Image 1 (spheres, helix red, strand yellow):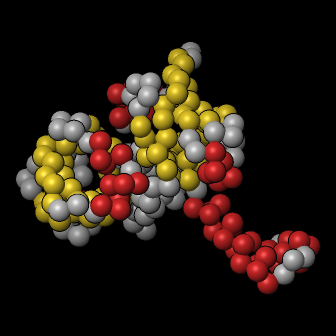
Image 2: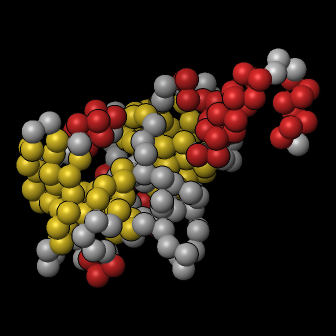
Length: 211
Protein backbone atom coordinates (compact mmCIF):
# COMPACT_ATOMS: atom_id res chain seq x y z
CA UNK A 1 0.00 0.00 0.00
CA UNK A 2 1.18 3.52 -0.83
CA UNK A 3 0.27 7.17 -0.23
CA UNK A 4 0.55 8.60 -3.73
CA UNK A 5 3.37 10.94 -2.70
CA UNK A 6 6.28 10.39 -5.08
CA UNK A 7 9.69 10.03 -3.39
CA UNK A 8 11.91 10.01 -6.44
CA UNK A 9 11.98 10.02 -10.21
CA UNK A 10 13.83 6.95 -11.47
CA UNK A 11 14.97 5.97 -14.96
CA UNK A 12 14.54 2.77 -16.97
CA UNK A 13 18.06 1.41 -17.56
CA UNK A 14 17.23 -2.02 -18.96
CA UNK A 15 14.21 -3.87 -20.34
CA UNK A 16 14.35 -7.64 -20.77
CA UNK A 17 11.59 -9.89 -22.07
CA UNK A 18 11.12 -12.99 -19.93
CA UNK A 19 8.52 -15.26 -21.49
CA UNK A 20 5.29 -13.25 -21.47
CA UNK A 21 6.62 -11.00 -18.74
CA UNK A 22 9.13 -8.14 -18.63
CA UNK A 23 12.01 -7.43 -16.28
CA UNK A 24 12.94 -3.80 -15.66
CA UNK A 25 16.15 -2.39 -14.20
CA UNK A 26 15.42 1.05 -12.76
CA UNK A 27 18.15 3.44 -11.63
CA UNK A 28 17.53 5.62 -8.59
CA UNK A 29 19.27 7.05 -5.51
CA UNK A 30 16.98 8.21 -2.70
CA UNK A 31 14.97 5.05 -2.14
CA UNK A 32 17.79 2.48 -2.47
CA UNK A 33 18.73 2.59 1.22
CA UNK A 34 15.07 1.99 2.15
CA UNK A 35 14.33 -1.11 0.10
CA UNK A 36 15.22 -4.77 0.25
CA UNK A 37 14.58 -7.75 -1.99
CA UNK A 38 10.86 -8.69 -1.95
CA UNK A 39 9.80 -5.14 -1.01
CA UNK A 40 6.92 -3.53 -2.89
CA UNK A 41 7.69 -0.44 -4.95
CA UNK A 42 5.22 1.72 -6.86
CA UNK A 43 6.49 2.34 -10.40
CA UNK A 44 4.19 4.81 -12.16
CA UNK A 45 1.49 3.64 -9.78
CA UNK A 46 2.00 -0.07 -10.41
CA UNK A 47 2.95 -2.19 -7.39
CA UNK A 48 6.04 -4.22 -8.33
CA UNK A 49 8.32 -6.43 -6.24
CA UNK A 50 12.04 -5.75 -6.04
CA UNK A 51 13.85 -8.95 -7.07
CA UNK A 52 17.39 -7.57 -6.98
CA UNK A 53 19.08 -4.53 -5.45
CA UNK A 54 22.18 -3.05 -7.09
CA UNK A 55 24.41 -0.17 -5.97
CA UNK A 56 22.53 2.32 -8.16
CA UNK A 57 19.37 0.51 -9.25
CA UNK A 58 16.82 -2.19 -8.51
CA UNK A 59 15.24 -4.91 -10.64
CA UNK A 60 11.52 -5.67 -10.81
CA UNK A 61 9.43 -7.99 -12.93
CA UNK A 62 5.94 -7.54 -14.37
CA UNK A 63 3.79 -10.54 -15.32
CA UNK A 64 1.67 -10.60 -18.46
CA UNK A 65 -1.55 -9.65 -16.62
CA UNK A 66 0.08 -6.51 -15.23
CA UNK A 67 1.52 -5.62 -18.62
CA UNK A 68 -1.88 -5.92 -20.30
CA UNK A 69 -3.63 -3.64 -17.81
CA UNK A 70 -1.00 -0.91 -17.43
CA UNK A 71 1.31 1.37 -19.40
CA UNK A 72 4.34 -0.77 -18.51
CA UNK A 73 4.10 -2.31 -21.97
CA UNK A 74 4.96 1.11 -23.39
CA UNK A 75 8.10 1.67 -21.29
CA UNK A 76 11.26 2.53 -23.23
CA UNK A 77 14.92 2.84 -22.28
CA UNK A 78 15.87 5.98 -20.34
CA UNK A 79 12.23 6.81 -19.66
CA UNK A 80 11.61 8.55 -16.33
CA UNK A 81 9.20 6.92 -13.86
CA UNK A 82 7.57 7.87 -10.56
CA UNK A 83 8.81 5.85 -7.58
CA UNK A 84 7.37 5.38 -4.10
CA UNK A 85 8.22 2.86 -1.40
CA UNK A 86 5.50 1.07 0.52
CA UNK A 87 3.60 2.74 3.34
CA UNK A 88 4.74 2.03 6.90
CA UNK A 89 3.07 2.79 10.24
CA UNK A 90 5.63 5.57 10.73
CA UNK A 91 4.95 7.24 7.37
CA UNK A 92 2.65 10.25 7.15
CA UNK A 93 -0.43 9.62 5.01
CA UNK A 94 -0.24 12.91 3.13
CA UNK A 95 -2.03 11.65 0.03
CA UNK A 96 -4.60 8.84 0.14
CA UNK A 97 -4.56 5.05 0.33
CA UNK A 98 -3.17 3.73 -2.96
CA UNK A 99 -2.87 -0.01 -3.55
CA UNK A 100 -0.81 0.01 -6.74
CA UNK A 101 -3.50 -2.00 -8.55
CA UNK A 102 -4.33 -0.18 -11.78
CA UNK A 103 -7.99 0.04 -12.80
CA UNK A 104 -7.68 1.61 -16.22
CA UNK A 105 -5.46 3.53 -18.61
CA UNK A 106 -6.34 7.18 -19.19
CA UNK A 107 -5.29 9.63 -21.91
CA UNK A 108 -4.12 13.20 -21.40
CA UNK A 109 -6.56 15.39 -23.32
CA UNK A 110 -5.57 18.96 -22.48
CA UNK A 111 -3.04 21.04 -20.54
CA UNK A 112 -3.92 24.55 -19.40
CA UNK A 113 -1.58 26.87 -17.51
CA UNK A 114 -2.98 29.03 -14.72
CA UNK A 115 -1.39 31.79 -12.64
CA UNK A 116 0.12 29.29 -10.21
CA UNK A 117 -0.68 25.71 -11.16
CA UNK A 118 -1.41 23.77 -14.32
CA UNK A 119 -4.66 22.00 -15.18
CA UNK A 120 -4.40 18.52 -16.68
CA UNK A 121 -7.53 17.05 -18.26
CA UNK A 122 -7.73 13.28 -18.74
CA UNK A 123 -10.12 11.10 -20.70
CA UNK A 124 -11.07 7.75 -19.17
CA UNK A 125 -13.55 4.91 -19.61
CA UNK A 126 -16.92 6.26 -18.43
CA UNK A 127 -17.77 2.98 -16.67
CA UNK A 128 -15.39 4.07 -13.89
CA UNK A 129 -17.05 7.46 -13.34
CA UNK A 130 -19.01 6.02 -10.40
CA UNK A 131 -15.76 5.85 -8.41
CA UNK A 132 -14.98 9.54 -8.85
CA UNK A 133 -16.37 12.64 -7.11
CA UNK A 134 -15.33 16.26 -7.38
CA UNK A 135 -12.63 17.12 -4.80
CA UNK A 136 -12.20 13.37 -4.33
CA UNK A 137 -8.95 11.48 -4.84
CA UNK A 138 -7.45 9.67 -7.81
CA UNK A 139 -3.97 8.23 -8.42
CA UNK A 140 -2.42 9.12 -11.79
CA UNK A 141 0.82 7.23 -12.50
CA UNK A 142 1.04 6.79 -8.74
CA UNK A 143 0.51 10.47 -7.88
CA UNK A 144 -2.28 11.23 -5.41
CA UNK A 145 -4.34 14.12 -6.79
CA UNK A 146 -7.63 15.88 -6.12
CA UNK A 147 -10.27 16.20 -8.81
CA UNK A 148 -11.06 19.79 -9.72
CA UNK A 149 -13.66 19.01 -12.39
CA UNK A 150 -15.49 15.85 -13.41
CA UNK A 151 -17.60 14.76 -16.38
CA UNK A 152 -18.79 11.28 -17.39
CA UNK A 153 -15.58 10.44 -19.23
CA UNK A 154 -13.21 13.31 -18.43
CA UNK A 155 -11.74 14.75 -15.26
CA UNK A 156 -9.34 17.58 -14.47
CA UNK A 157 -6.69 17.87 -11.77
CA UNK A 158 -4.58 20.88 -10.80
CA UNK A 159 -0.83 20.47 -10.33
CA UNK A 160 1.26 22.91 -8.28
CA UNK A 161 4.78 23.75 -9.51
CA UNK A 162 6.45 21.62 -6.81
CA UNK A 163 4.52 18.48 -7.83
CA UNK A 164 5.15 19.24 -11.47
CA UNK A 165 8.92 19.34 -11.02
CA UNK A 166 9.11 16.32 -8.73
CA UNK A 167 7.01 13.90 -10.78
CA UNK A 168 6.92 12.79 -14.40
CA UNK A 169 4.01 15.18 -14.96
CA UNK A 170 6.75 17.54 -16.11
CA UNK A 171 7.21 15.31 -19.19
CA UNK A 172 3.56 14.85 -20.14
CA UNK A 173 2.34 15.75 -23.61
CA UNK A 174 -1.14 15.65 -25.13
CA UNK A 175 -2.06 12.04 -25.88
CA UNK A 176 0.06 10.65 -23.00
CA UNK A 177 -1.18 7.31 -21.63
CA UNK A 178 -1.32 7.13 -17.84
CA UNK A 179 -2.15 4.54 -15.18
CA UNK A 180 -5.32 5.29 -13.21
CA UNK A 181 -6.28 3.89 -9.83
CA UNK A 182 -9.58 4.96 -8.34
CA UNK A 183 -10.33 5.31 -4.64
CA UNK A 184 -10.55 1.89 -2.97
CA UNK A 185 -13.24 3.07 -0.53
CA UNK A 186 -15.76 3.55 -3.32
CA UNK A 187 -15.10 0.05 -4.63
CA UNK A 188 -15.74 -1.54 -1.23
CA UNK A 189 -18.95 0.45 -0.76
CA UNK A 190 -20.15 -0.71 -4.17
CA UNK A 191 -19.31 -4.33 -3.33
CA UNK A 192 -21.14 -4.20 0.02
CA UNK A 193 -24.22 -2.69 -1.56
CA UNK A 194 -24.20 -5.29 -4.33
CA UNK A 195 -24.03 -8.13 -1.78
CA UNK A 196 -26.83 -6.56 0.24
CA UNK A 197 -29.05 -6.37 -2.84
CA UNK A 198 -28.69 -10.14 -3.23
CA UNK A 199 -30.38 -10.58 0.13
CA UNK A 200 -32.99 -7.83 -0.03
CA UNK A 201 -34.80 -5.78 -2.61
CA UNK A 202 -35.75 -3.13 -0.08
CA UNK A 203 -33.62 -0.01 -0.59
CA UNK A 204 -34.60 1.35 2.83
CA UNK A 205 -33.25 -1.80 4.52
CA UNK A 206 -29.94 -1.41 2.67
CA UNK A 207 -29.61 2.23 3.75
CA UNK A 208 -30.46 1.45 7.37
CA UNK A 209 -27.95 -1.41 7.41
CA UNK A 210 -25.04 0.88 6.55
CA UNK A 211 -26.21 3.94 8.48
